[in-house]
Image (cartoon, rainbow, N blue to C red; front, side, top):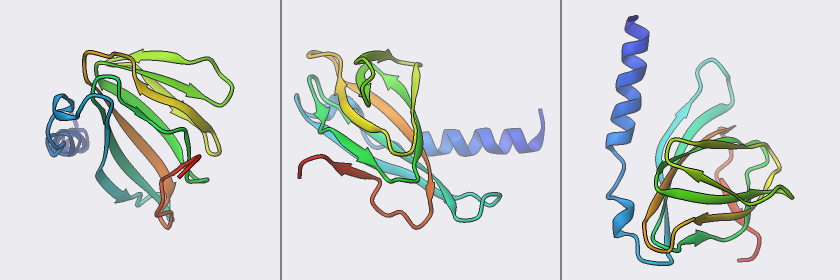
Length: 141
């Protein structure tokens, strides 16, 4: 293995070890969103890589929303199952280990725990303009 690969692996694992608490302590019907990393991309001036942990208690959800206009997002479910609907696509349930993407300008109409009993958690990784400070805008305040 190369030194660069080992260093990248160490950084990724270190970032995940900084994840606060577990989704199990998020109350039923609630959601918690935590920025867990924010790094400018040295090879892409003006762009940053940001990681957002989204934790859902049983039956929890986020309001429908859009993201920063520059945002390309890949989301990976890391615990439980998450129901997601992007634009006019069908609502889809993603289980632990499965991923989906959001393109710049997409509307995220459904983002919810697929279970009323178990917690769920996903890691959303954004490639976004470094100057973007608001990553998520709810449809209705």
